[in-house]
Amino acid sequence: MVYAVEKLSEEKVFKDPVHRYVHVRDRAIWDLIGTKEFQRLRRIKQLGTTFLTFHGAEHSRFHHSLGVYEIVRRIIDDVFVGRPEWNDEDRLLTLCAALLHDLGHGPFSHAFEKVFDFDHEDFTRAIILGDTDVNKVLSRVSPDFPKKVAEVIAKTSEKKLVVSLISSQIDADRMDYLQRDAYFTGVSYGHFDMERILRVMRPKEEQVVIKKSGMHAVEDYIMSRYQMYWQVYFHPVSRSAEVILTKILHRAKQLFKENYSFKYEPIHFTSLFHEQVTLDAYLKLDESVIMFYFQIWQEEKDSILSDLCRRFVNRNLFKYAEFDPAKEYKKLADLNSLFIKAGLDPEYYLVVDSSSDLPYDFYRPGEEEERLPIHLLMKNGELKELSRESEIVDAISGKRRTDHKLYYPADFLEDDLDDQDIKKQIRQFLEI
Image (cartoon, rainbow, N blue to C red; front, side):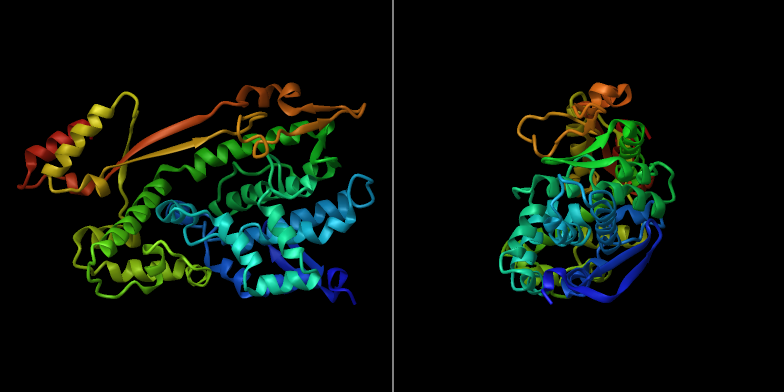
């Protein structure tokens, strides 16, 4: 039997709290799930440091990847099947891209990428195209199949309709993570009528479009996304944990460059610190490895590294104050000087963190593909951009919201006999 169309002798299912069941009949999908590179995603949290704010947010990239696959499977097997605009020969390509779209995520995802200046999408492509079990499975479909899957995930594929199912302003990726993250954090913001949206999705030339009758369900989806970003993803306590995490990694990297003698050699970080990361070294990193180092670094001689690690491990996080960098840059300079006088390195203990989101846009110069608009399919067959028909969406289109916070260790600023006057001045600046 040709591997591309080979089915399992019986359907496999994963019990899922969001979609009830994830269904697998394709041999290639089942084999991909079983690879060590995909199983690694069980050890990468979907929401990074958010578990320190919402204690239920312990779900993994593995959960999410299966969820995205299941949504895409339902769309193409239940909604698109038989429609002339959909080419069923793209079915396995679409399912594989959906399943593997987050394959390259590292531990604590975006914070980790920021420190070491790399992009998880580059590692996703490297895993798919490299000497890996995932590549071996994909190559059984055809020699060029790994390249085709990688191009879909990179959004460079000529199959624009397939790309839009996985990466657009209304895609399976977002539809899964909004619901899944809402479920595990326990909030109500991320819920929307996905069943309705799936029923009114239609394949149309180069993108998925939505029947006009489904506009209100899409409005609900966009507002759910907006609220999830500000209530969950940008929660200031989670951001505080991410600030400390980032500073731990920066400090360890700096100490390594200074030939600091660690009590336990950070062998898992060596290639990262040398900025020569191999795929093999990257795949050995997961959150259990990172937490191991944070545990042992609590005992390091370097007071900054040990303190930051204790804070992260024991959830003794930084407090925050509202901050406007455009108006308060002098205040920040003064605070920097006071922190130094108080014996605190402002590089690690006085941190400005910014959050920004654009909930919906129909055009952004330089990023047209990234912000492909949502189109409504009218009864006469005409396509209309969503914000032209929806007053709700029009009200938030193109409006970027940005929030700035200033993070600091409040416990270091408590009154004591040492530096009492300096700490009092700092507290006055911070209005605490």
